[in-house]
Amino acid sequence: MNRLEPSAKRLTTEGTREHAARQPQLAMAVEQAGESIVITDVSGQITYVNPAFERTTGYTRQEALGRNPRILKSGAQTGIFYAQLWQTLVRGETWRGRFINKRKDGTLYHEEASISPVVDPAGRIVSYVAVKRDITREQGLEEQFHAAQRMESIGQLAGGIAHDFNNLLAVVLGNLELLEERIGTDPVARNRLAVARQAGKTATGLTRQLLAFGRRQVLLKQVLDLNSVVSETLLMLGRLLGANVHVVTRLEKDLARIEADPGQLQQCILNLAVNARDAMRGGGTLRIETENVTLTDEYRGTHGVVQRGDYVLLSVADNGTGMSPDVQGRIFEPFFTTKPKGQGTGLGLATVYGIVKQSGGYVWVYSELGTGTIFKIYLPRTAQPLCRREPTTSCTMVKTSNLNGTVLLVEDDPTVREITRRFLGETGLTVLEAETAEDAIRQSTGWKNEPELLVTDLMLPGKDGVTLAGELLNRFPELKVIIVSGYTEHGLPDPTSLQNARFLSKPFSRHELAMLVASMLGVTAADCAP
Image (tube, rainbow, N blue to C red; front, side, top):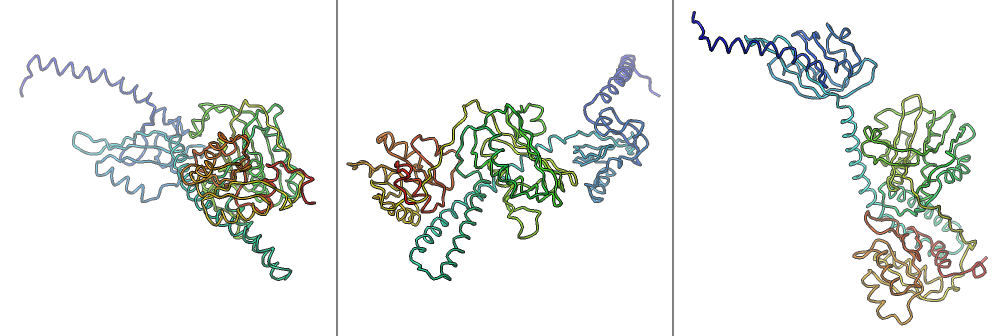
């Protein structure tokens, strides 16, 4: 047996002492680690857990020792999943992956784990050590991000389709109006025409809902008090909800102001109320509440897509059937519905989602099966003063020969332009036409007497309608402007930003256009037909 040299002996002794000194430090590090650490024997029985395991799972060390890690099984993973995990470990390899596990109290959580075999000097596996990290929050934020991306993609598709349909419907409904004058008194023909017009109006409603979801509709924003919008909407709810739904409100007295489209907010409340009614089949209670809230960094920690700050909260809650997590994950998708075929389009909540997002807000749903559902809408506060709503004219029909002057019509779709020209011509105005903003500007250079009114589509090739109107107003300050659209793109100027401008949504009727033109040109009730 060879004797060690003194220097070698000293090194070996010092190394042994250093190793021994590190043992308490290693044990302390394991005990204080932020990740869960679990050690099992070769049969899978737990021999050690650290405090992080106790905090994450709810099981104490005494409850876990001697038991199998299957106490955490949630049922989310299949038998094949666990079989492949064990095949990796018995080969002496490290397994890495994710679990959906269940805490002692029954709640689920997501874990990212690394499980490694521990071998003795002879190479035999003597135990397994797992280092696991709770990633529930990160998983939730990731799912929110992917859901937002999916909704954005669907919204772009829906908005583009709705834009094309809007133009087609403008042509169809416009020609039906013109045809009505020539069809005579044949009751069968007029009935068929009425059915066609009603179908067109229904299709118009669907396209507007799609545009709302895709955040492509034009919002007529104004500074308003949400309590007033809720109070006005309550007057309409009685007919919609029926006698077996009891409505309870709690509206904060000094509610902050918001900037939104009041008509679209009413639509949100109505859609949520109808949804709640359908979830309370035998009747129930609908609670509508408003509140000033501040979203903090802590709130962002669980709702990562929100911006912190001051908001006004609109809460709509019911005590109906509730929703499963799978349904909640898809509830805002267009055409997704849990109602029987023919009893819903699946666009109500998609419309709510689009209106809220386009208004700069957020909407969340909280629900459990059998306990009901709460929708919470957060809209950013504004310090701007309240707006007064403009009174509508009492005029019911404009005499088609009453208006004088010239209107410049700018529309790139030739069929829509032709219908709009016919409608404007019936008011008695002289109509000039242009296909693009550039064409309209070229025409304006030769004007001796400029038109009194500009009617332009918002979406034009090249310059948009708002930019065109702004340039013409710089040269002709007295020019009145009507911006027409059923669709807008992100980044375009706000069509309501021009002081001399009004907005008209596509598709519009002959009467709607005539009424707006009359009001813009200062026609009084005395100038209108009874």
